[in-house]
Image (spheres, rainbow, N blue to C red):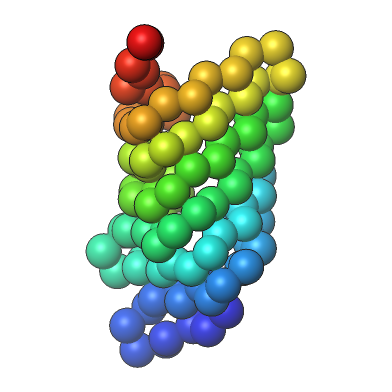
Amino acid sequence: ITYNEKENIVELSENSKINFNNINILIDKGIIDYNNNEFEVFGNFYLYEELTILSGKNLRGNASLDNFSADSVSYIYNDDLKIDSDYINTIARIYSFTIFIN
């Protein structure tokens, strides 16, 4: 993990593990751009917050992860609810899934 002070960007290398705002996240590779309020993961991620587990690919959102989207996600809540989806989009932590049923 490196910090570019001039551009105010945190560069996350392969298998980076970070914790912020009570969110634990493991990622393949990504950046947090504080000047532009952007968080982006290139590849796989695994996110854990209280009773929620979310994994997927290509996470994109604001730096606080209040609003984000991702591809190929699995969402688990309190071991009682599991959703697999091609896409997730959140606004103010309200989850919206794209689900295709065959």
